[in-house]
Length: 203
Image (cartoon, rainbow, N blue to C red; front, side, top):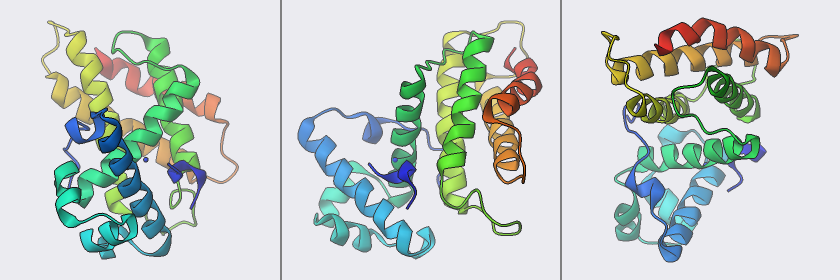
């Protein structure tokens, strides 16, 4: 599988406690489960992977799995979240919902992530794994929502939840269209365009 998964229905699930725990033993268990899922997804579709498959590949029991994740969808989202946050950290991006330059860097991070992701840059007519799509959007939405909640616009008639959902799908859809386009623009060029389109939705 592509490098993006070497070490990252739930479309409305935000990365929360299972993704954020810092206890070393828990972190190691989560890494084993995420690595197992990534390996299994090289071999078959996500829908055909069971919790038993994941625990067997990770050499942990089902009780341990459910102590960390409510289901395999939450595991997938944490896998995506880990990789996406690592990519943003590489770029030094910290989106706080208040700066247009940070929004552009965030959009660029989404474009880079999708360009590295398996199953996106493929022949026309072959859809991206739907659960992967939901996981990516949920991670983007969660980060946008956190930033917006820190900078509430009292003049806006739309809630931060509605705006973050709208913007996350807009960014994801535009970035996916770009990554599947032949002879596409550079990531920097498309980030400028997407930012100009979604920027007005921020406020």
